[in-house]
Picture 1 (cartoon, one colour):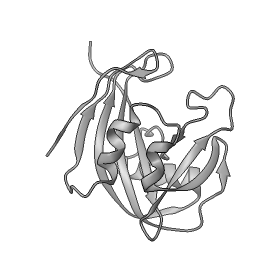
Picture 2 (spheres, helix red, strand yellow):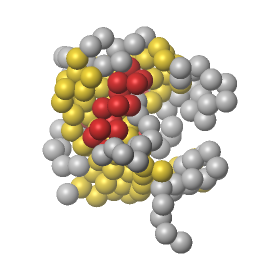
Picture 3 (tube, helix red, strand yellow):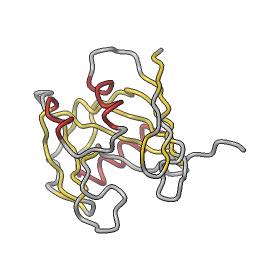
Picture 4 (cartoon, one colour):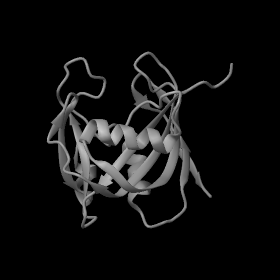
Length: 162
């Protein structure tokens, strides 16, 4: 069976001093698969977009800011991650410069500036704890990982860097 994942972006916006990251606290919709969790910003790629245009659009829609500088930190294949077991393929970006003032909330929840050093203390997807250190480390190489999910839980994680 061919691998036909939902292609999406996941972005982590840094504060101007690079000590904090803008996360969404998914607390607005009772039926949200992510309810109660903190996450980066992002979403599904549209057919007419390239992946960078998708990331820029998602940040604009979710936070009302414009990405000035961003870098691809990695890719993650999430087989079985979707609500109904759909496969996802995510492109993970670090946004280190933006213009505008971020929204305080959007339709999915509150946007909060969080100290990078505190991220692991937050309610996150368990799988995020594996790749988030790679997003914020100083290794210039992108990571490329696979994290299968079953019944809403990550069952393994492996990655390579090139």
